[in-house]
Length: 241
Image 1 (cartoon, rainbow, N blue to C red):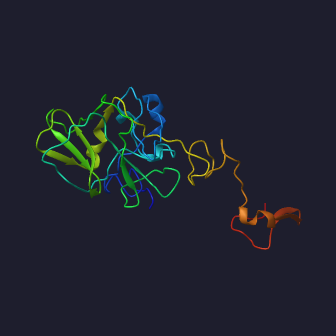
Image 2: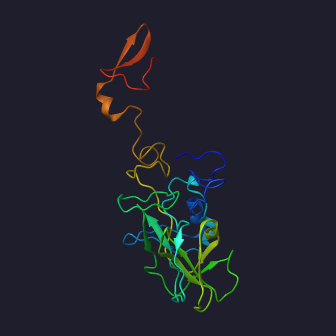
Image 3: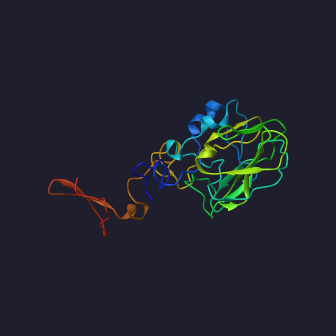
């Protein structure tokens, strides 16, 4: 559960298994992408530059909330693919909490949703690193084997392919869709945005250096010329100063 060694994420990357694709949220504004949550679904909204320029690890910005990716795993292959008239992207998010959080990999606790609401026929999805022919039909899949990213470079043909792991980093999205960047809040339980602590500091309420459960019990007294925090219970971190 710790990022160490040559890992590029927590327990992934380097000599470990490949990390899922993440967002570098600080770049999204530069690329023209903006955040949107539509009926619990996320996607790509606007953007004059390829989404690939906005991708990096979650560690770059703690307010990276979710990513257009499906983890490496099992996948279905299809004899034919349905022609899609707009980018269709899986956005993984945690349904049990109100705020989106970064993910380091696929988990059964995360739910995938199509994010094509509001998109138009404009737009295309290209897998530049592996596309060898404009008539190839490609399907990315989630950890359960469901199609997670279905797109075409040309007309539908037999022979769809599944990709996993590092090959997903080459995805480029252009045209109309939804956004993949969400800003952090002051009650999401995560230190993000301009917060100096978890849900405090910056534009949120000031952080307290005293635990809430003992704030009313602490008294300051002068003992032998030094200030000391004293209370019915001695909490870790309190010391003579």
